[in-house]
Image 1 (cartoon, rainbow, N blue to C red):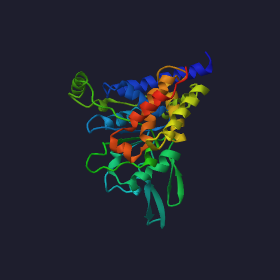
Image 2: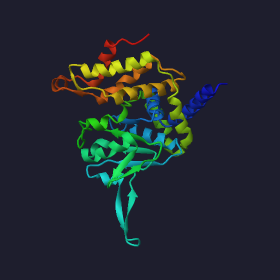
Image 3: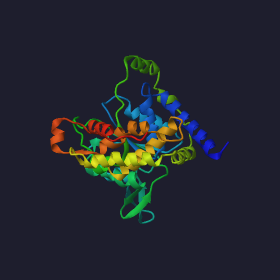
Image 4: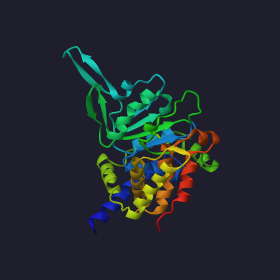
Length: 318
């Protein structure tokens, strides 16, 4: 067997173990789980926006428990300060010098719970960390552990006590999507699964950090044809030219769409990306990065509708 095929099969086994673990806890969200794993495998961050009680935090904790990694959770509140996330310098009386006390951001998997309940100043503390895997505190650059993954949850901005995330913050998230409500049958299954105890209590790690790093490297081996690369760029360029969009998708969005498409193709058992995978991921990857003009906002049109329209306008390669 060729080395490439062996690596492909090994990555597939890692993905299957992750999916099996998540399926023990989250029911009825199979494709959304695969979206999450695609971003995770592509070294991207995820923002889950949904109504309270739909399983956002549970999903994040299940993913963290599935890896032999350092996991931290930050509950964002209006009084949370950047130092509470990044860390602070404390004076050591014995040594008569300052020492840096690391904040919870120094971990492999960070759950930023209800991120839009904190002030924009505190939200911005994550910008450098998410983009460059490092933080600058008191003029000192401190690297974060590798890998570093942020999964953030937020309630809709119409809820009391929430702040909309700034554009620069949103652009750091590889994907933004909602879980939504499950069917009545699946909700009954959830009740039965938690009759005695929560399924999270029985969850254990199924992959190591080295296996996760291998998976992220294997994603880059999935083939993306030149025609599909031009297609991705054309979709992003269309958002910059659209009359209703004042802030279009950045080159980071194009690269993220390609990486996530590679990861989802790997999850689907393919060694190459197809146009339908790009079309499927275009909305969760691109829509949250767009800024609409005031007239479009007042009309009630959403960015997801605009992305769907752009997908209809831009012809996909055969």
